Image 1: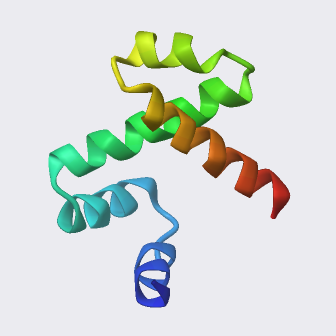
Image 2 (image 1 turned 90 degrees about the vertical axis):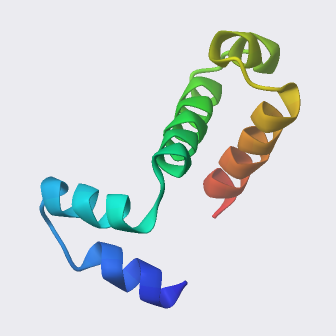
Image 3 (image 1 turned 45 degrees about the vertical axis):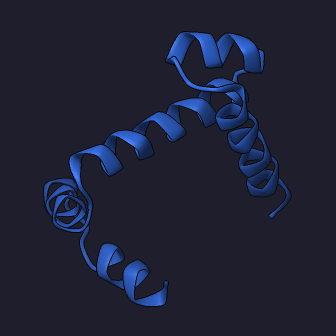
Length: 76
């Protein structure tokens, strides 16, 4: 994990960071990360989990996972 963090944090240019991410991840993996970020953002706005699942076309378990992740972020 430390190597990954270092690899990504060595750049301060968004275009270069995007390039590094596309080298590491498949388009599907990138889409999944974007979806997870959207879930966390919607949860942070107070949108109910079931509404998020319906809006994004994901399972409630996926949203619940995001909810746990958001809770961990806020506790850290």
